[in-house]
Length: 284
Ligand SMILES: [Fe+2]
Image (cartoon, rainbow, N blue to C red; front, side):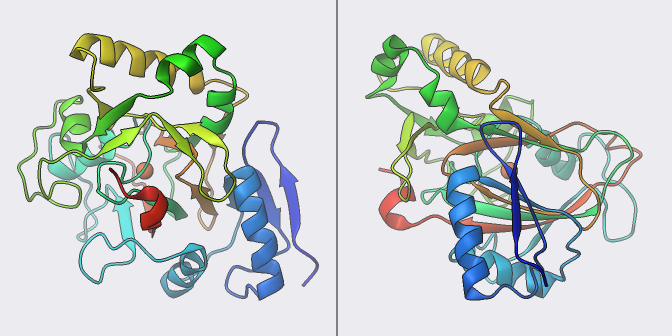
């Protein structure tokens, strides 16, 4: 196989990696992939068609797998039910899938936030259903000095109950991953990346209620930061082809799925989430 090729995107984040087989990653290739992960934060591997086992094995190179239920390392994010029918509006699953169409970082609502994720496209709707990422390192860098000073010591609570309630989805305790209990982790608005040392904004749909501010002021500030940060050249939207694999760094990015016709079109993604390191991703 020819040597791994890495081509950066025309944005502050992202690179396309070709001439590599993710089912056969040797140590030298892994070193190059890991260096690219820290630099570009979103790594696009077109046309890999990896198996579930290879998917878990590749995810494990990044760290421990975050289990969404005891022993469950791989999850299908899909509106297609086991009988082949599509989940309909109003159902819990549909509401969860609508929720991820809002900018977020995975598992910030858990005591231990996630390090990253590896997503593999299985079935893609003919329209919509892209995934978009936003670079929160560049988002932080582009803030005014006044804003950097204003948010330097601020934190926000992160909750999946909160973010789902914002799209009209009321969820009971115990209704699945992220709904274990109502305790919300408190996380600083500025996260220092444990491997690169770069500061990044840690915001998104799960973030709410900055201590020391009233609810309106807090919401206004979080919305303002998000609106500012998620703009070109700090964003990349991927038009998936079945077989594509994308790995990303949750410690310095936000992402969202783009809307599609949930009623009539299937979107099936296979997902492995990488657990954060307790030293850097455990909430206070
Ligand atoms: Fe996500």
